[in-house]
Amino acid sequence: MSRSDPLEKYRRKRDLDRSPEPAPGDPRPERKTPIFVIQKHRASTTHYDLRLEVGGVLKSWAVPKGPSTDPSEKRLAIRTEDHPLGYAAFEGVIPEGEYGAGTVMVWDIGPYRNHNRPDEGEDAPPPLDRQIDDGHATVWLEGEKIRGGYALTRIRRSGDGEQWLLVKMDDDEADARRNPTSTENRSATSGRTMDEIDREEEPTSFEHDGNDDDGEDS
Ligand code: MN
Image 1: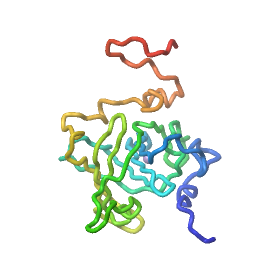
Image 2: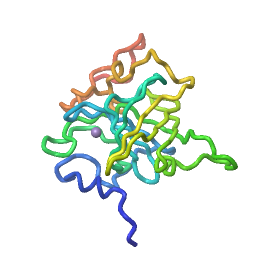
Image 3: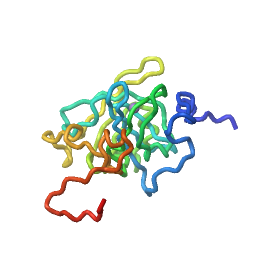
């Protein structure tokens, strides 16, 4: 079969003998529903990578300022190559000299669902791969930091590149006063800060709100 490899670009950009990033085929996090992940990536500039599990890969966008919880904020999102599903669990350091060199944190992760309306005369919304191809997708995210409806809209295509906007939809999870990219700085999976990931350290203890038994004694 000559079906093209959706991860060809992912492989081509990386030397997986030198980078600890997951290889295509590495296991996906064990979750039943489709997952989204937002990785904080301290590379030449710090940005956030939004990835949605669609059709066996992680559709990906680099969001320079990260997601907002304020529906009046439009965040630029630059489409990047599809990533393998195992990437959703990746946290670590991409060595200097390699593509994307720098520290990667799983800043938020959780289930998500298609949040679009059905087209007229249809029962179900269009599948997400089609929404993304068509340049407008709406999803409902259920992370620890980021929740509710988000709209992704393509605003420009040039050559191989695509610019999109990521905008919080106006729903019960919208909150113009929150600013999670500046106030919530720990990994959703390991509890570590960027510096702790950098130094490959265990998390320092979480700050507590009165409950001092977190079951850890180290
Ligand atoms: Mn990145």
